[in-house]
Length: 367
Image (cartoon, rainbow, N blue to C red; front, side, top):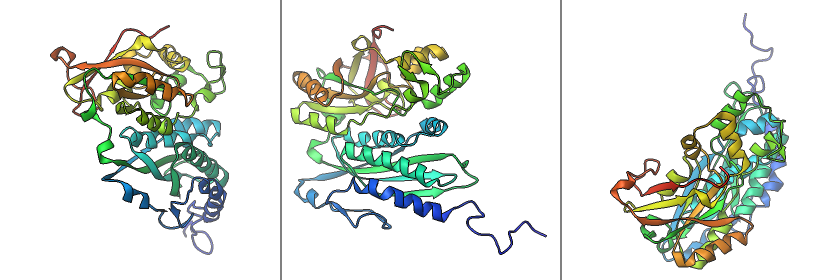
């Protein structure tokens, strides 16, 4: 009478493979353990991740900073190419560097992977990438969850998200209240597209009929390899610049582009002028522009165009900040300055936040 399996319907019949889930956890253990220092209590596999915050007793007034994010539609490229061990860097870059901009040191992280079907080796590759990125950022991966959602996601589909917690002394908090007219802007180069604007990029590529296997001379590799270039993680180099004593604020350039994200860390009475002529966006950006005929304004409010982080710095300390960043192997340069805001500058363009104004001037070199 019914389509019920003989012997009754099992969880496996519904599409959830508990055995595969357990196997995936086993494969993840070693990667996760490498992110653990003595502050992690109880190891791997508990209901909650435990982290010893005794060090915060030495703080005068500790503030906890937290952020959560995902990777976005870049996961579709990873799935199409069956390459899953780099997407973790995109997750950590998107999450950790959002708290670093306020001067917070990241302490611990949790992740969440939803998938249509648990393939243990695939899940382990994703987590291995997350763990390697955590090591680079100096953050412990104390917990996570892998959830199988048959019928909601396709068998080869997954999504990744995470949350991080860090700490900063209240009187060392970076932000708009420390920014002054006369400060200068220090740009830190991105490694490529990072993890924003992939809905636009994927549409451009699809409309052009390009495959991810296509070799692109300007990239020196395939299109897919370029699109999967991991997000640069700025945590340690950015925090190291604080030793110069001249950093007043930082902006992580993610969704919304350079102008909108920089405006978020400015007070309402200033304008940041960015000189496009101080850098040339990498070939991936001009390829997206030319292939899709994407208007310049749309590029600038969608992609990072070669700048992944900006520090707002006292003018006298700019050279020291540039040197500090470059010592970590990241190109850095002075890209503009902060001046008093005038009525002609218009209203704040800071992603709905009441802040200052960012104006982009001139033309990029070679564009």
